Length: 413
Image 1 (cartoon, rainbow, N blue to C red):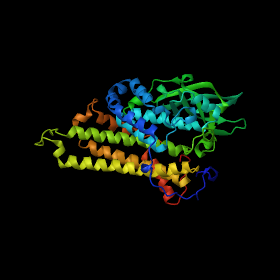
Image 2: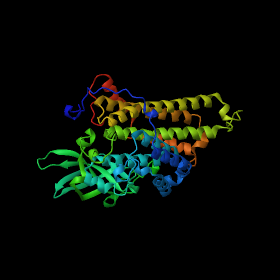
Image 3: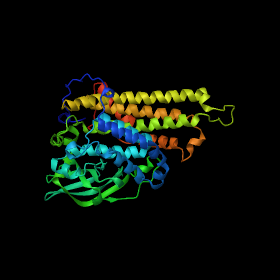
Image 4: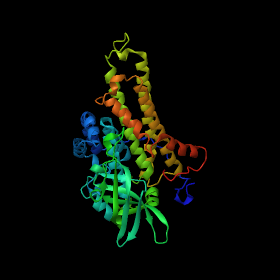
């Protein structure tokens, strides 16, 4: 059961909102979105080369940097753009239309940059010094931390550390051992150049994310670069209050989940685009059909997939709306609202999976070629749907519990 003292007030009423889709996009967001849309073809074309080296090609990173993508979650006082959640999601979706692996790495860097605002001012000044920053994260506490003069010593390893090969900082979970024998989970912010990165990312999906294992031994971490899991999850670390940002104090897990769903929707959109472009004028082998687009089964599956993608987008709009309203009001979402984010995010991802299955059923053997972008989006989406936090059934379970009047039985909300 989730401890009662870690839950926000359950009686805070849901606000009535107009929907995130009606929000006015800022000029900064509009400019970045335009720049990203222009590079989508390049990101997509770089898919094979990125998979070959099991890490996104440098051109992708440089193009996103030039577009200003890695400033969108950085507070303005540090030279960032401090865009809203909805604006960040739109940009991540477009990146993922170009390349799923690039989108996944981008969401890791962007969401972790927002998480850095949970740290004390001294840490933020170090992390955001350049205005643009790339931060990866290893959020499973597979490490130990012990107190020492001025801070802590960190020892451990973190698997599946997406984007660590191109990150400036790494946000790492660990168990802090106190003198009285008690253990507390914490997040440490560490420069990537102080870590060892293994060449152990050999997979069949999200190949270009470079999600290698990072490790450290007796690495000194100053005290101001460590926050507890409890304070981070509940938004009580006090870090956000020092940035001068208004309406950006989101719930940690809800924020990460909301941004991550954008990757799945972007990939689903791209797969649909690729399938539609491929079937037009294509004859069906061993049949009298000279144009697959004229075949009823193709028409049905294309329409079904498109509708499922739109349904996923509509589900996402609901929680993007109330998360922003809570942040604008200076409030944390209720426990039930956090469970709702997990559940609707799970349903949205499930819809994108079903959409790609519908498209896959009429894609033909040509889509199996490594040069065909469709198969890459299909593999990446299905593979990333196995991510522990994003797996549809995990989110649906906690949401279902609250709908049945039960405790969500999870702190990851």
